Image (cartoon, rainbow, N blue to C red; front, side, top):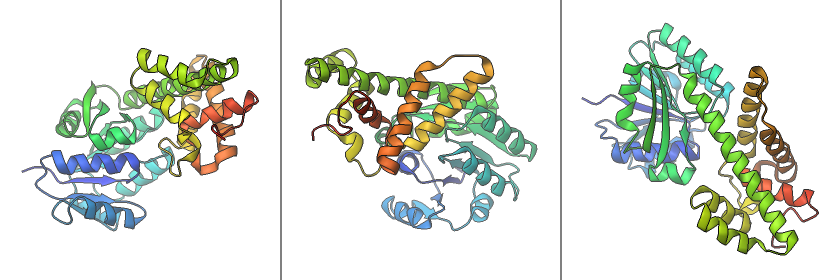
Length: 308
């Protein structure tokens, strides 16, 4: 008999991952859904096929009592810590908690200690990929924790919510979130370079479309996708950001903290974070990571919004 699965947190990534768990996870029980705003859980349960496929629950107590494996994907370290603290008010003995959030590695290591001390199991499993990849089941899953716990999660990773696993079985849980934080600096630096390149192409007369043709040929994949979003104006037109400016800045802060405590230098991340601060000022909660393009444009004497 398959374990009872539950999911906490129904943001863009969580919704896509839940869809694939229901469609491809070989579940013999409905997926339990909890979100602080319950209407989100109600709406997603209906989209996934109703009570036979997914069931919303009203409280974390109800969820932890019923579930065997609990996934969560939340935006900030304090939210993750508070949610786990609430779960630990009830018995987690024999249960497995898998955190897919992007948090500081110290947070993951502390949670692993708390949960295993209470008789539960813990896996840190941040994922790489945009919401569209979550919806398509093509994320990259990074798993760390005790080997036996990781093995219990893997039936739901490659081929279900993801296209590949990076397996850190037997390593501290924080190693997976450490990789995630460092990996996200690559995304920030990529966006920064694209923004600077497109601004230079515009100001020198080469033109952004000519530069984009080269990007398509040389760097298919994320570079091309972000470049296209910039040129289309998606970076300021989108009402709901795909990579919210606050979350991007949280990841940058974690990276810069790790650099400071280890004596590493991350000048590019400092530059990207400064531009994200300007994005927040200009767009508020509409700010997205590719909105850095607008900040770089503005610094160079152009309008924040292109095409106007």
